[in-house]
Length: 285
Image (cartoon, rainbow, N blue to C red):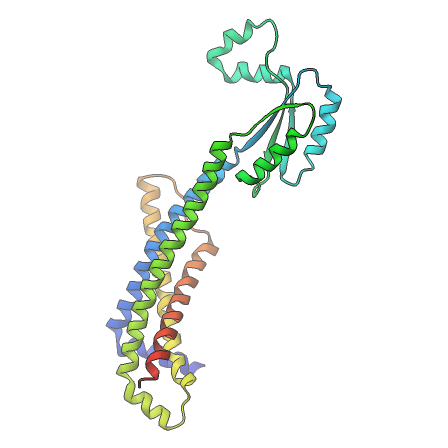
């Protein structure tokens, strides 16, 4: 194993300019992916904050006994999607309206009777704030005989889902495109290295070296290039994040797991590029 690594590192010495070009190409390819990743991370965080405000309100029929509502709230709180269920009486609804609707405060004070219905307000658990689960919970609430109407902002919940899907699709397409570019570049450099060492490889075969033994240093070389490219991409992404954070808006950076994922992605790209190229070109040497 140490021989394989030594041979792989020697390749950097034999062609430093070509190796630097490979690492730089991977780095900038992954840097672009990283920039899109930063946008996706911050968009996801913003969407998560918006999703936390997803709320279902079940308005109750006038005259519904409090005891009935209390039992129902206990049942609703056991729904697997529900984080909390709160009963809001008619008086509490009016008090809240007077506090929040300042422009109508005088009108609300002069009311002879309270026009606002009692309600049950539901907050959903993370992972259940998409349109499908919200609709499902709303339909179950309508099954209670004392529920007059259920509101949850169907349109903006569905738009929130679409934004999640668009962000995921764009990230996948961009990542795949730049991964292909990096694989082609690495494959080209490995092919040149194989051709450069064709006489040496022929001699190794004469003394009994297997294709697996010959291939190993090239695979390790590609993986190292990919890993170095991933590390440089993370450094460039952090520099971009620092500038954005200082001069434009407060943003979030990758978690340790996400950063390691990008480095791992680079290593995998390097390995795939090497494997694709070396296997084909060894047969020609």
